[in-house]
Image (cartoon, rainbow, N blue to C red; front, side, top):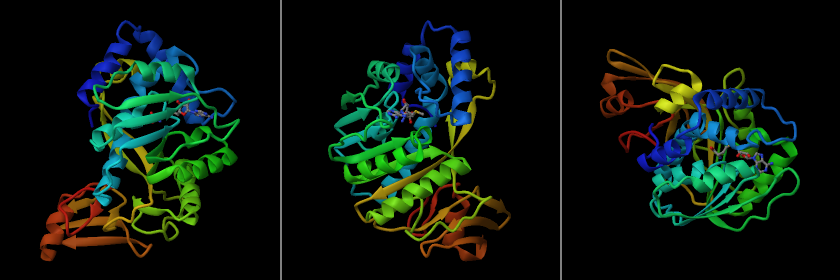
Length: 327
Ligand SMILES: C[S@@+](CC[C@H](N)C(=O)[O-])C[C@H]1O[C@@H](n2cnc3c(N)ncnc32)[C@H](O)[C@@H]1O
């Protein structure tokens, strides 16, 4: 996935003139903090150099993951047309750019972000859309934010930076502020999946309906060492390649998400949980099913339409014999 052209140009403009060595050093330091899931009282991004490194090295991947999760939710909720978004732990506003691309109805966004450097860089990114943005400073560790109601609420790549108690408080406050859809995105690691499972249990108890990826509210059928996650292929720009000292022009961002809805989805077909394995005349699928079970299904050419659909499926798609692919 590529960033939308206007956002790509805005990121390139923000990075113009910044030395590659400085970007690479800041990106390496940031990546070490993220990998260690360090919680030492500091924001990972607490200076402009780190915020610029985030734009170069992380924004393309968190955009791709969040945009993919939104696409999956939007297929399940075709009548959902959000006008307002609350983006919690907004960083440079990545999830607002993704929502503007997914839902043309979006008109305004409130972005809550603790790091002044992130807020500065985010406010400078003119993404070429007509969304009116209000930036707010808050630290969710010290006080649960008071959140006004919004149609769409997003918490992307934030829970891993919070202690368990702060996560629980934030999720409850976010759900109370959600009039339509709450979308949570986390890194696609076993720990990220566990955080999503905790949020999922709390949200289901509070009355949420899971629009995606699960086609049910039953307990997750996967057991460790297995875990639920998906992947988005991210195109790397020249500055992205230089920042990471990489030569492959893409990377695969692993992520996990939860689309918790107040609107019942129209359909909830099986979800493809791993890359499909295709051989001549057959496709093997690992599926999560609406009855709350996980299944391995072999679809053969004899099944006609089901086989034609299965052949085009990708990891993370819904296996819906009533619709071609996706979602
Ligand atoms: C990994 S970034 C994700 C940014 C953006 N949502 C994205 O997907 O690109 C996490 C963001 O959450 C913010 N954050 C983390 N803990 C916070 C807290 N306690 N209070 C306010 N913001 C916080 C960080 O400053 C950072 O900008």
